[in-house]
Image (cartoon, rainbow over all chains, first blue to last red; front, side, top):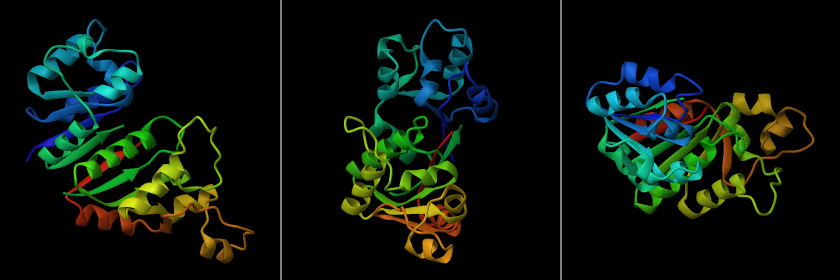
Length: 102
Length: 130
């Protein structure tokens, strides 16, 4: 059984991503949405944590939320896949359970 | 696949109502079934027809109502959360002795059992909130 985790808070605002990473089984999928997309960009203080997450999990970021915050897919840490809402739906289909970290 | 959605945040608050709607639209576009959207906590405010957002802004409530009409989606508002926040349908207004109701088309007021049922009946239950 695999799980999709959604994280919608910036790591600069809350420790939602850290909670998620502390609980998610290795190999599960993590989708960064809303303010959670701030974790996906290169050059932030949280980059090392996120790179560690990419090594252990499949990490995705919601493209429209990235663009809405003035960031481009090219700025995303390598290994993170950019998806649209259709891709979000596909991820929920591919995993048995969806856990929202809010 | 059969989907259920839980919305725990009010409209125009942060982004949960919008994300939930975009997700719902995307799953319908892919041919999946949206069995029910359950509105809980401040999420119940998605269902008031008295909101009048500026004309150049999206109307979150109308958007949900139109989706319900077009795709037959069951929009359910939690009764206890609704009572606390002044959201009433005709029956509730009468029962509580209030002078009117404000529920939007396509929405209905019911209990938490509807959320549990969605969790049992649906292949996926996806949560949006703050």
